[in-house]
Image 1 (cartoon, rainbow, N blue to C red):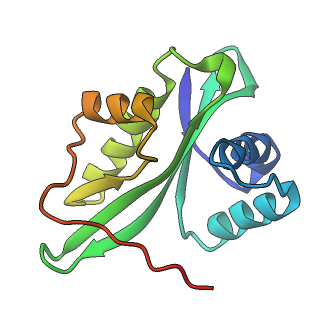
Image 2: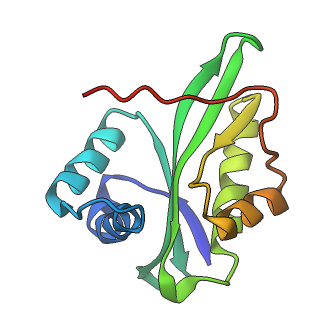
Length: 150
């Protein structure tokens, strides 16, 4: 498996798996809007997306992760938010997520980030175990809240 950083040239490869990721979390597919969303993030350098590709076939996407930059006022350093990560159903149990997160972790170190943050649904036990096995710890210092903006 190869991990590469996505560019605009990868949109056609990435979009179908991104749509499946959205569906996994109960969202409607909206493939055109999903592609436009990804394109904006890449064009504006608003996120970093890593792709896990099959060694023998660059057209076979095994998984992806998308990170957004943020900052910590308390530590005066960069923080990376691992906002999206998804592995194709037929590629699960092949350590794809581990490889993607290791690449993200390397990038976080190279950009002198103080930490990476990740969230997942409370009932996604598989993802929680993966994150914990890589070294993520549940935040016990801060409680997170969400304010929906309608």
